[in-house]
Length: 123
View 1 (tube, helix red, strand yellow):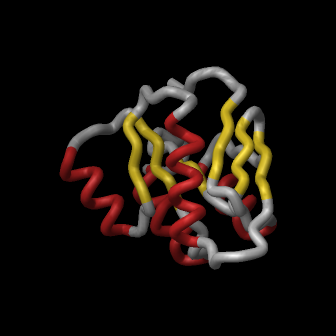
View 2 (view 1 turned 90 degrees about the vertical axis):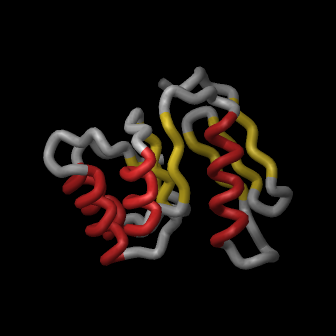
């Protein structure tokens, strides 16, 4: 797992280390999350899950139309995150030969389409 505290750092990480999925919080200190999403979409087709406290319908629609693959509103339980990630990977990954991903208490088995969470709840 790689994390980034700013949009520019995150975009740099994506260009150097192609992730399986990107979880994007809109509350970034250097750029608006919508701008970061546009920049991410310019360099990769990796699935993007927006996870934020912003729950306005117009904002959700705007970001989904701008390239987000899914949008979840915080707070949410730790059990929901693996399910969302599994669904994103299932829709975006070709069938067969899938591996398992493990990140900070989250294990996603792409072949079995299962996710397990052993960490604490996200907020």
